[in-house]
Each structure stands twice: as C-alpha cells, then as structure tokens.
Image (cartoon, rainbow, N blue to C red; front, side, top):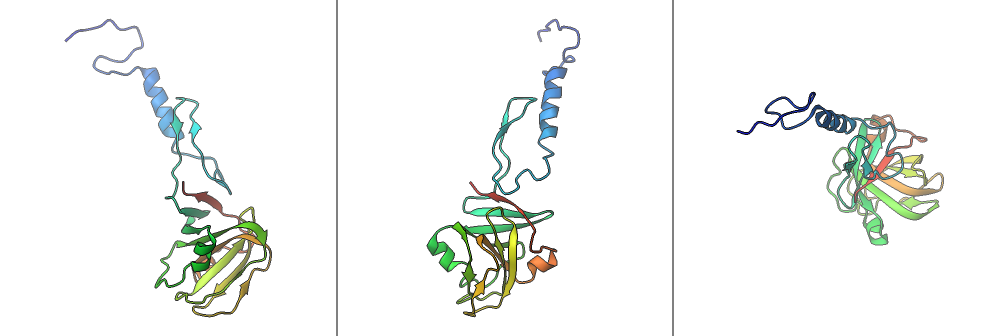
Length: 183
C-alpha cells in the first residue's frame, strides 16, 4: 500500500473524500429533502441547478398522460384527457374509479362547460377549474344519466373523481390545487 502525504485537514487515512467534498454532498442531499411551499402551484416542476454542487436535479413527475392534482396532503392521480376523442370518452364504461384517482379534462379555451354521464357506470364528482386551476364549481353526477351538468362559471379544466371525494377531503369552490403534468 502506498501512503501519500496529506495536507492538514484532509480526509483521514482510508477515507477517499475530503471534508469539503463530504460537506458539499451532505448539503446536496439535504437540499433535495425540502422544497419551498407551493413550488408547483399551477405549473410543472423543472430541473434546477443546486447551488452547492452545480448538479442538476429533476423533481419527480407523474407518468406521461397523467397529472398529480395536489390539494395539500391529498393528491389525485389523474389521467389527462387533452384530445376531443379522449374528452368525449372520459370515464365511460369504467367499472370503478379507485379512491385518489380520476380524470383531468384539459381544454384550449376558458368557457362554460357541460358534462353528462351517458355510458358512465360510476357516480362521480366533477370540479370545474379556471385557467389558474381555481375551482369555480363542484357538482355530483349520478351514473348513466343524460342530464347536463353545466359549469357555474367559465372553466378551462374539469376534474372527475369518485362521488363524495371532494366533500370527504374538505375541498370546496375557491380551492386552488397544485398541478404537476407528466412528461
């Protein structure tokens, strides 16, 4: 074994890292454990350089075609319906909508919206959201009905979850969730 002379304050014998490097790595790990409140409010999270190390970190994201709708401690994992065909099909023909899941309908414009429950077998709640993701209306929809469920205000998004989910989680009109779209 070859012994090298070490400057004062360098790693102890047998340790390949200096205290400075260990400190930088520890700082990088700790910075990944906490985030600023509201970091993803209404927008996707992006990769950002970490000042202590200069290493780019990518925040977690849902899978492609889905989104996380985050209401404080409660999150809905939603399929995203962006195309006219996806929006028309919605949750039709589903036998169940598991708790904490749903569908987020994304439209190009903010306008009054109307949904129905034709060929939908599961009772649902629908929340209409404006362009800033603020809930402007919540309604309950019974399965296999053709009655229109018109939004009370113009909306750009609609979130469907199993019936009762919003009330059980204390989510009301005026609530603004954070939304993270899959990449």
